[in-house]
Image (cartoon, rainbow, N blue to C red; front, side, top):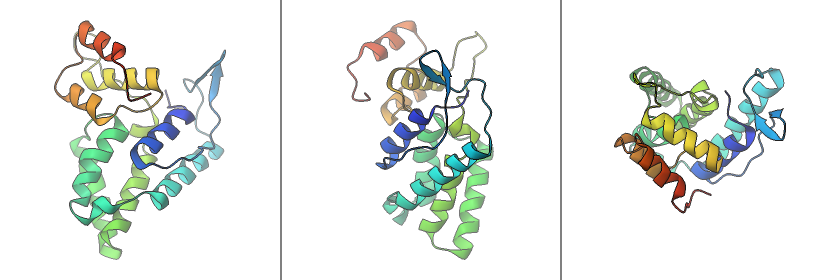
Length: 184
């Protein structure tokens, strides 16, 4: 399923400090917003494109003074995709960054990568990974908890718990849910 407009907006605000409205109509199931069965039409694609362009234009890319590509791949990508980037994704975004630096400076190249990430299915769609025993992997559990409870992508603290395998037990999940959150 696709993230709701609110979930995308909250994530952008959390990561970049930019409050924008995503001009995409969410599906409604009774009183709840959802995007389980609606496809992306031309108007929605334009809404995602406009949001990515606005975020890229307004994002503070000061981190790009040093280790710009590492920051994009290791921190921004992790938070947007709710998991570490795959080797193939890292390769593609690195190639896009290198292409951008051939014609423009590193900040502009970073903008290309950021804009591509914000329009990626890995950001816009909720993609869960199931382990052999039928349970969600820790990154998928972190994403499910955060999107369901707080309406935004997991923060670095929750993603760190996922990386360390700390969301695999019922007790750990209950602890995360019961913890007073700064995420709200």
